Amino acid sequence: MLNTYFRVIVGTMVLLSVILTVYVHPNWMWFTVFIGVNLIQSAFTKWCLLETILQKLGIKNTGVSCSVPSKKS
Image 1: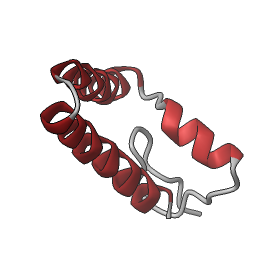
Image 2: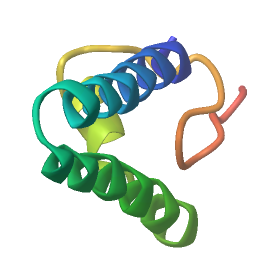
Image 3: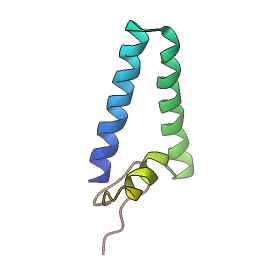
Image 4: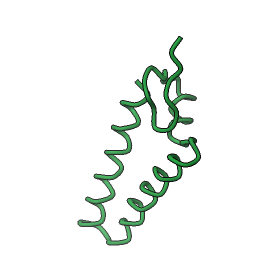
């Protein structure tokens, strides 16, 4: 479930930043850059802020998340 929430939130943020870049101001592209840098960072460090936030909100990690595969019993 965590993976689904992660993908929906990140996809929405990317689309929103592109829409804001086109219709509001070109500097909104930096938001897209920020998202991309965080995704790359999480690949190397195996830590993802969004994953931490979602887990604290009570979302269960039932599949592969953005940084760490789930531990199956």
